[in-house]
Image 1 (tube, rainbow, N blue to C red):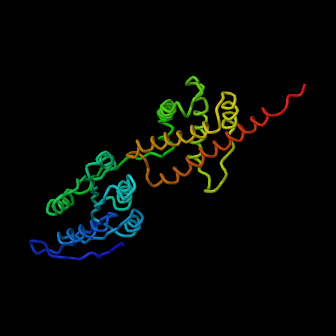
Image 2: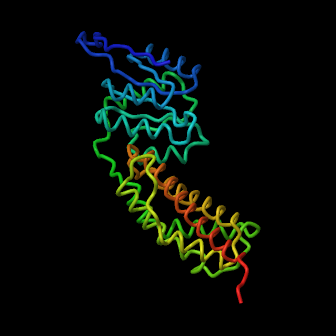
Image 3: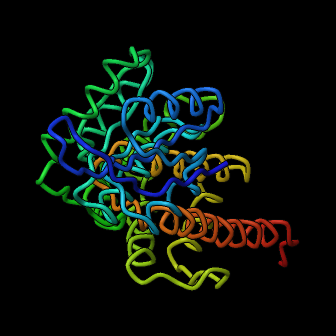
Length: 296
């Protein structure tokens, strides 16, 4: 449940009128959220709370905040990074703080690169938490902006890295991919696929639109038939390719433009699946030809 408190003016230690800092607290754990809200309000903050990324984004887009305190996982990996990115966009002067447990410190390190001003490790005493936020408010938010890149740029830059990752996955599954091929023949279709994919990302199609035909995907189906692949092997290769692509995005979360990420992921899945469908169609068509009787 989202709670919204309006800004309140108060007196500081010298008797001057001061506005209570407005802080957005984001955590999907209700007990943690309620407990922290009471602690922060008792420490002199005007607190709004959100239990999900969507609730947080609505508040961030509609109200000003002086500070953000967000859990890193809610429950999706990197959810806190999305909230940080949004706060940076709508409230660039707001202090952004990630709350993380020790098992999540790899993602927390990525949050630093996302320009989160502070990483706090659970558990933390209430006094230390309040003082840390107040000290950070006095220091102000980091002034240096984060340079982001499009998903198309990242995949184009890391095409060979992604192909190498895919090939490693294939080679680690000898029971799945039993056909022995040279690296050149195994990966021959991938440069074409990546070019189509990057073009799709740069010139997006409306959702629900049929993907463009790919001559390379059709040729790939014919080649895999000739090489002795089964249909299941082709599908498994495609699945592992999506895994490798998304691994590349995961490795570049600190560089990606989060506002474009969801649509890009949907386009990637649709393009790879569309090319798989075209590959399978040509593979099956060739198989039917093979079954035709030989006419003398």
